Amino acid sequence: MSFVKRYFFIGILLLSNSTSIQLKADSSGMQKTIIFGAVLTAAVAYVFGQDLYECYIDHFYSDEQIVERSSGKCDIVLQSTQNMEDIREIALKYSDDDLKKHIRAQYSGVYSFRSYHEQIVALLSGVQSNMTVLENELRRLNGRYAVLLSIDRSNECAQLKNDYLLNAYTHLISRCKDLCDIVRGMMEDLKTFECRIASFEEYHKECERYENEQDDEWDRDERSACKRSRQRKLNRYRSDATSGNDVFERTEKSIMQFNLDCY
Image 1 (cartoon, rainbow, N blue to C red):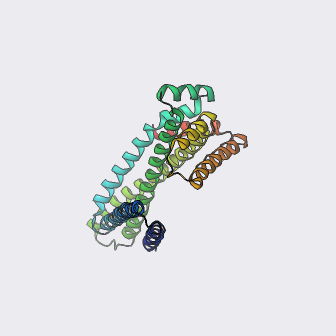
Image 2 (cartoon, rainbow, N blue to C red; image 1 turned 135 degrees about the horizontal axis):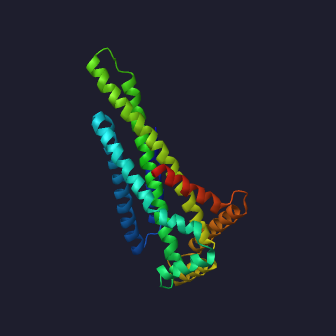
Image 3 (cartoon, rainbow, N blue to C red; image 1 turned 90 degrees about the horizontal axis):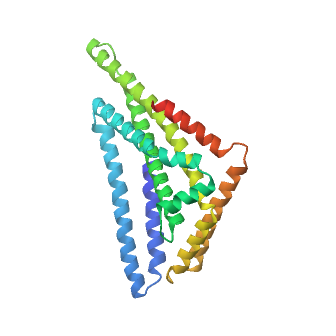
């Protein structure tokens, strides 16, 4: 069902956007239509290829291959999450003034705060991808585990092999669930940190300067959408900052738990 829904909405998106762009039937509009159509076609082909590959793994990989693959995926996600700990500690330890100094030291250009914010957004995208990987592995591991439980165990050799695989699957399912909790905590902390940076006046001024420097392709609606997005992040950060659960205390607990889980 999810497979059908995904391509149904992609088809609707392709049709609606192509129609809306083709209504602007000047020469530049035609060129944009061709480029936009090519990009959407490539995106659909990529998603379709990913789904075919996942289906191939589900149906043609042996249990041993699934165990080895899932273990490797967990190692990659763990390493990726550990590499983000420096950013997480900055979110915890730095005051607003110290954070602003840190940002200016990292990015010396006119858009230092905007660049740093984009870095956090990119990290957040990576965390969300890690979560998707873990969810896919959990789905696959649970499915294979259920199949093994249904196999006849009258054959002693087959039973020994099944017991080994069941133990391996049990361990990997537990590990994936633990990593999901860790990655979920990292995702929440990075979202809060992103909103914190977006609450700085310096960030807002840089965004306004950037928007004003854009050409006429940026119409009034696009500028308003950018401002509304920044305001939503600012409101979220203010809401977190005034809530009963202090964000920095929660982040510190998350780091301590992460270190305990990893080591």
